[in-house]
Length: 209
Ligand SMILES: N[C@@H](CCC(=O)N[C@@H](CS)C(=O)NCC(=O)O)C(=O)O
Image 1 (cartoon, rainbow, N blue to C red):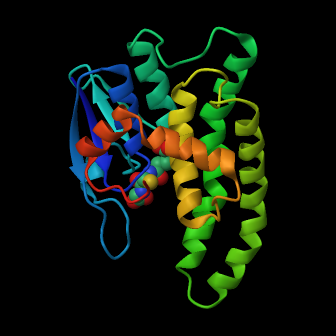
Image 2: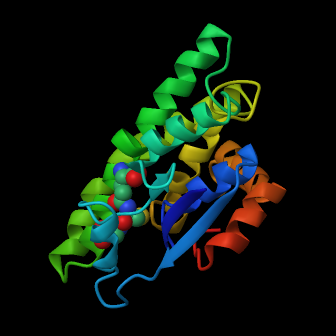
Image 3: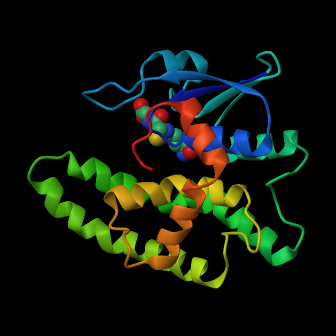
């Protein structure tokens, strides 16, 4: 049985959603954030030295896997490739791109903006320097979703799942709003999927919907 070590209100929500999409059985161990620092509790360090979420444990403890992209690759393989790389080459290349882009390029400026927002006085001013960097990404994403229904191409894949959290976070604090209609509609569409809703029920608090 797969165990997901799931931090409330976090990126980890995507792993639950993918598991629902793949129909793989799993159990969830929930962790609450420290209400003052918003950090994960120390218990997560006992699961993986980085102490972050998501982390999954599978095959009776043989595999402990951290990092969303690596977890997605593992689960897609385990499910026989469903939701994974499309056969058509251009879609396959886009799929791989988004699997890296979501955490490697899109999340960092959003995280910087969040952290600066907690720095008194100068933090707010510095935040304004970050917004144009975020806007470059949001314009790119909008143009991509204006060209095709899903991130990889014509079909919904795990590329859409990994892109969900940065775009939900962008709507929360990165200036994403109805002025980017294709991205907004994509968010509305994914939130209506029954598997997305089922994952919310399993994961508990998630303030980004
Ligand atoms: N790139 C990593 C990021 C992991 C990460 O930073 N997770 C956050 C959840 S949003 C976390 O555990 N934060 C709590 C902490 O840093 O203590 C991934 O996608 O798995």
